[in-house]
Amino acid sequence: MKFRSWDKWISAITKLGAVGSILFFAIELQQNNKQLEAQARYTQFEIQSYDANRVVFNNTDLAGILLKDRNQKPLSELENFILRRYNTQFIRNWEFEFMEKQRGLLDSNLSTARWAQNLMRNPSRLDVWHATSAIWQDPFRLALNTALENESLN
Image 1 (tube, rainbow, N blue to C red):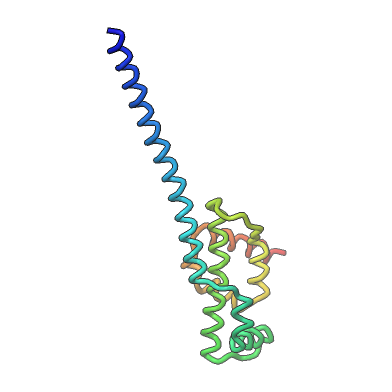
Image 2: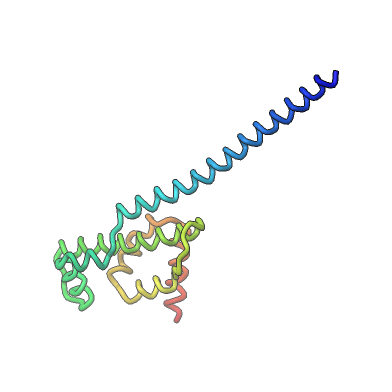
């Protein structure tokens, strides 16, 4: 009789252990999934993006376009197109950094105020920001627009 009682206890403990193992495994999978999502987003970002300085240094045409824009010299239609694409990617890099920081996946010293200052000093980039505002994710768009408003008040 006592042997059957022990069997029941051992069976119950074994079942609890199995359930606990499954729960632990599920939690582990969830954590791994979050990490893989973050890594996939970063990999996608790296593919879509590039180091702006390296591109400018390796591409004298782009460097020339940036200098012409900075000196407010007229740009051809092709140069305007290239500059617009460059500025869009520049802002996309900011958006990525901002959203990853919001998700808690990136430790960054990002500053929407600094980005707003950059936009205010760069009219062509500011034009791209206004022309493409609908494509940016809401939290990023709202934060940068607020920073732009604050910057224009200063």
